[in-house]
Length: 298
Image 1 (tube, rainbow, N blue to C red):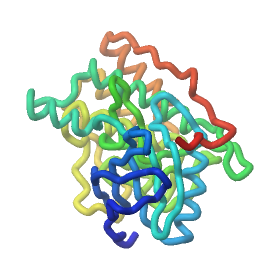
Image 2: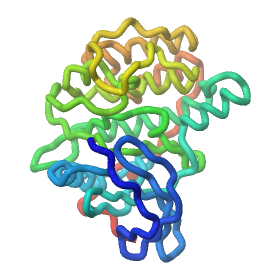
Image 3: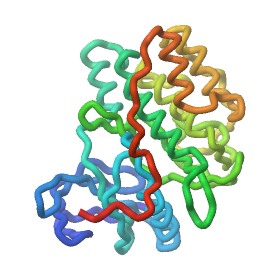
């Protein structure tokens, strides 16, 4: 995707929304902090794209706006302006990549299993809800594959972890589906390199994310180019940075054959908690639904 123009803080993509300062810039857009006239602070993501691409992405994001879960970052408003899709979201306190760096700087380790496990169990619940084939899209019942699970896409809001950044999210209605490769290569499953997605693709990225946050390292050699040009075959993962119990469980999640992975991310995390002798946290899912109408504008 070609570079997009820099966002100007004087822009007003939504009536009554004011931009304050840029929070980050990526290959596919910018994130800004802003606020409503009421004073409520929010995050705004500007996603660049061509008109045809924007139309399809906007349709998908609007569908995702109707899916709610306590550990999916809420989307308040979505619109299309020239050259951008603009998404207004809850403003979080930080992300797990930043927390991992704090532990590395202070203690020389990744995030302890006791703390990371709670956050990842929350995300597992949200991801399983997203992946499950029970959402309506284009007159079909589908699941949604996130396609970009990584530490920086797990935000922290108080004591809650919330999955965010649904720009690559894709509806899936079969066990295998052709889809153009995108996402973050270091965290992507081998099927992405063959332009395929499966209902279990996110689990592979979830497992790589868990290992990275526990150790500060990837279980594979880093991809030298930020693309999907290298072969889909990877060496066996090096999981020596975690306990033998965790390594055995993660090894199954990192199986190159999606059908041989765990049945769900929640099952993966339950296995880790059981293996480490920890009590699985209570995950509130009472408001995990697919809404009949979009989230009300604020």
